[in-house]
Length: 327
Image 1: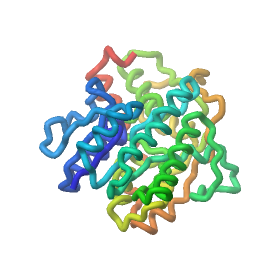
Image 2 (image 1 turned 90 degrees about the vertical axis):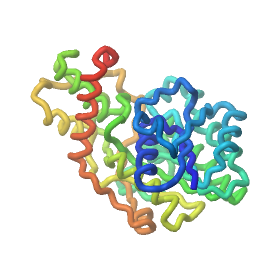
Image 3 (image 1 turned 45 degrees about the vertical axis):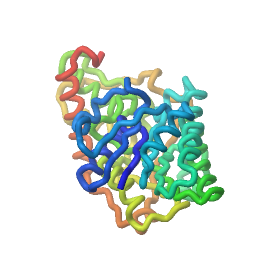
């Protein structure tokens, strides 16, 4: 069996690739934007006999078609995206092109394929959810709060369209906050961990800078997330279905920051940073994952404290190994 992972060099894609190599005998085609894409997250797989690298920018029709034709996958995990909400306010057109048009290009290239296809949407599609709608079910109305979230609404609807119009075996996930080692420093909890590591190394003053601390998030570990993605396509897969997936620990961003601060004596205080604030923010991100759990039997296994410990250890190690590139 052969699986194609788009966005394979990223945070989630690299964890998924490692999971599939360890737990299956599949051959993997890891799709990267270009030969210049950083391979830091894939260092353990570069020379693996069951791994092949393909290069295709989602903005390039011919490159995407060529990659799909070369792979002829049995399974597709479409994870590639411009995934940073804050960046989408600065670059809305680029975000829409990659996330919406890029998904169209991939599904066009896969049209007629019997592959089981996972299209990764996002909990951000729900956006600003009133408390009376908590926990969030799959039928909760969309109220996206960023161009990124709007792009994921488009991705979500495009996946549904290609399933209904062309009979493609597509399933959609709306994953809530997931984190752990390799999480980009543009996301709140990873930014806090990175700042702590830099403070401990004497690189910056002992003050953590932050954005909105009041937003509610439900945290899952990325290693639980990729196990869920695998189960989505292998445990009685049902094309056309949409599933919420998320952890079992809900708290404000401020509480997450304080949990990480409790792991060090080096931090004195925190202060707001306007550059880290969104014009509007998705809040009350608390999922009802009953549908997915009942269908697959999936449950999150890694506790929040372990996730935060591993995230902080990742940044401590990275700052120690690459001190000149962290500033």
